[in-house]
Image 1 (cartoon, one colour):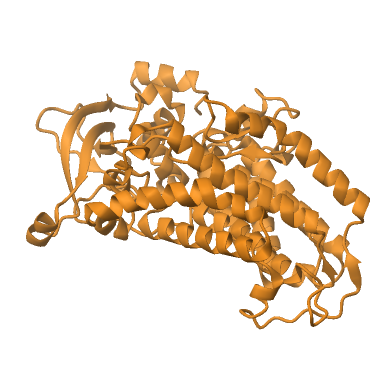
Image 2 (tube, one colour):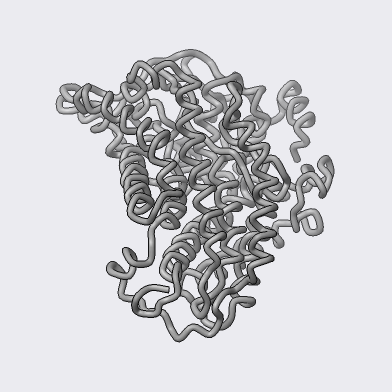
Length: 487
């Protein structure tokens, strides 16, 4: 208890659950807008095909029962409503069992999307959200105080997020050791934003200092999460500041926001009570869960932590991995390697049939990925553009390693409205193109002088063919589509 009688960790629970509700809200809005075009019955990687090839035990999801677009939409909108109720605090106004049920539904719904989301949901922040969402089930409501063990389990997740990211860098790219990674990162990261250009051209000492600060925050500071309150508070504030700088310098989906939410668990009620006007109501429940169930929860997490700990200390550390189908205790990391060049896959179409050397090709523009040299890199995060992120990965390897890409090209040839909704522009609004192709370009930020003289944000050089020109009725193309299960 605090001096004024406020139950300990009441404020921590409040800001953690509200922050987590915001992340859930963003994640479910992404599902509302993108899940069916990407993974629906007629998506790029249809869920109905996936659930016929994978067992429920390996990837539990409600969508094994109802792999239909209607179910995807209902569950996504249900998640939006539940997250909004949590964000306003409505879900915690009754008793802890209602609150726990509410948070369990959020977790189960999002687990259902992630476990059938395949490569489009294969990002580390998906498992981060599920693990944090699971712990939120046990935090109670506004009339109760959470057990300290639950708060420490959240801090344990935060430790794995930060320390894992630090270790993967030291073991990975040598540029993290010679302090040069930030010479490239701002330009070559998955999705630069407006400030990325300015960070890229900042003085060299800021790049080297940034790498050193990164190592300090990810390798030293995490141990402070388990220290006495004043040290833990300082560690939390350093982590939050670090995540804010990352959010300013690029679009990393809701990764930075979610990490900030986790860092709130390392603050203390005495500190938080001075910052927010909320006052706790009369406490009707001392604790949501009894001591023995809390100890049992900690024991389960400890057992599930064995594999992540082994991964942390392994010289062959995996960057992001889940060791169980419920995504309860995972291993994390980010940017173990940094690319020195930025390649972009530029998708084009034409009405010429067949195309010739004189054919005029028209580019499809993506919402977040670079394309138009004059367009400033947009701010997207904490929203997540799943197709745009996969386009960044696609540029690093041949198209045949990405089955969804061939299906994507077929959707463009068919003028599929759902697929086109994922793009910024459609150069063929009246009827679909007869041929599509993809070229690979190397993109570079303009220098400050070039930016001043030309107004361009990017320069690019043609790096060759990525995907050859095809029509929907080409026999070889149709054969590839049939192998992918396209319909």
